[in-house]
Image (tube, rainbow, N blue to C red):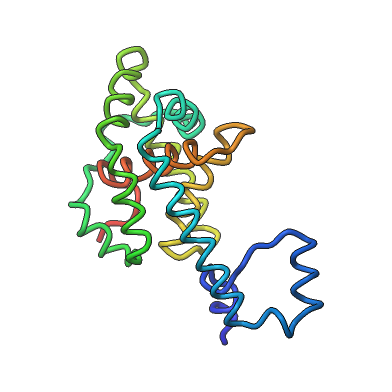
Length: 193
């Protein structure tokens, strides 16, 4: 296994200290296959919880996420490029089927996000541009860390979710996914050929 493969998200499993110690000290009971299966089960559980929570996303959660993401100063409208068609952008960025499905889950709330951004823009005409600028700044941070396209997308969602307040909930994570998926679809954040 190469160093890049060893450090990839596919090969990592995040554990608390006590579970990490338990697995390291009980290697017979925690085989490679059992750990891979446990990781996959957990990822399915989290994905299912986010899909279920997606229908419960409120303007309050969107406000929290957008306030955090949109803290970067707005750029001029001319500097925001219009996006490529969704599938073309997914293909161009070599995003996996898993991330593609997450984007589509998030886009189930595209109308709600669009309505929220439009409403906020009535009071703050630079709101949408600030939102884009914030996500672009996080995107370039992720790129500078050498993340893969899938990891970059996950980083954007995690950053939006983690910075949206002290209380994490499936609804807040779903709101973060909805905002990032919406911005992925409607503006040019990821790479373009």
